[in-house]
Length: 607
Image (cartoon, rainbow, N blue to C red; front, side):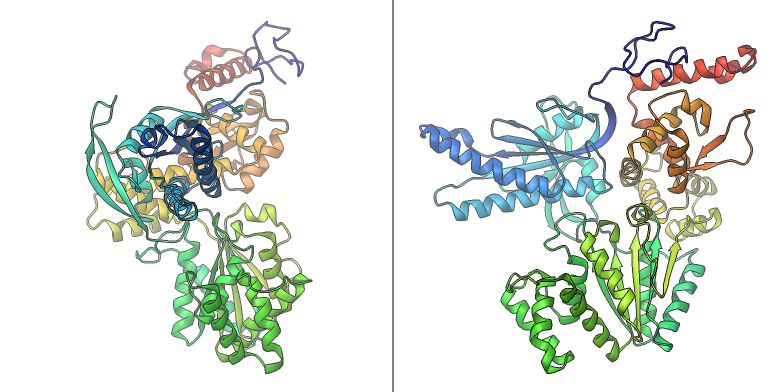
């Protein structure tokens, strides 16, 4: 390990550098700046309920409340940080960020309110009433916080606590940042601004209504599809072959969040249905999975007309009727049983072998394809359980001589988890979606902002990096505040989640490289320490499309890299606390100074 101050080698366990005496980093909770969503839940009128009550009754009541609330929060990926009297504080986005942390927090709040209502029904005389609030904003986050230590600190925590006290009993409210991040997902009604204790200005708040979309999804964009002609042509060509030659095929579409995977699939689905074909969608969720086969189960539900909220006996009757209309009589009972298990209806004995469920699903899609050609879309398979991925593997490998195209949508990191995906399958195509070109991005902006000034178009093109979702969010942000220089929270959340999904070494390398600048060098990064194998980390970052190696270097004898986009560099840099930035800047300058004969020649770089 190199000393960050003088660059000399330091023994791994040494606290001080033997050459210059500088203190080295010691083990402890690592801190970062992160945008988090904080949920506060509190019991209404708890003091009155406890007045004169037996202490054992109070304890039992509180334990029921705490247990139910914790389970609901953790189901959505939140971390319960502490209990303050009857108030519970949970953090979403720490220690790792996800692109939908704000939405998760609001869904957890609604689920908690529902859970308490159900708790009251199960326990006579309980009569608990709670209220909740969610606020999103920047906080200092302890990555390795020990039990009892604060996970997140910052004004966002105080604001969430203040808003919670103003929420109506049995309801949840959200602050302004959470509103901006979740307005696509929930019905939100603006309330009169709240005079919160300790806040200089009144705090805007919104009352949360019913969810508008399924978890972690967004309404399909209605802007013209731009820059995807080549990709659509490939999928259409594969579809034509699957239909005309009865040659099933798997197309896996890869791309980061917001790049347009679902939009491409939607366009293809419209083509299929216009030609008399049928499209069946199955989506994996990051949470709320009742069965590991959820994506396949959703396909069966759509094909048989079963609704998510129907009683299990009604669902089973619909399934049995649909199977009877498709299958030979001798297969009906057994297939109904296995598809019922795949749906998670809980009415049948478990299967002795997984192959029975796989074969039932295979026969189901094969028989559907005899009626009309079928496009089967498995969406967001990066969230899928291994058993569902094995099922897709099985279907693509065994379904033959039928008019079926399987379309799987995934983020690039999926291929790291399943590197052999598609290998050994008779027909498999992997289709990466590239960012839009500047000209294509400008065309999208023109469709969203009629007669937009050239300077605004250039600004959005430069910032969005060819990501269609980022373009739409930036344009919406400009519509709200044309003078704002802040990055929309949705964009920041997507990039932060992408960074936090990296392996530890690659993530550290990316954060340290952000201090060097938009352009950085391999040896300079190596001398900052903390990355065991710099070359391996850089290879991983390049494979994920976060950085790019340049063919030529401005520094003799060193390898030059650049961040693929300024948003990645800026987001990574923003995650570092000021103290860490100062230390890394100093270490970078020290290494550069030692690397040249006359430091005066590069004074501007050192500055």
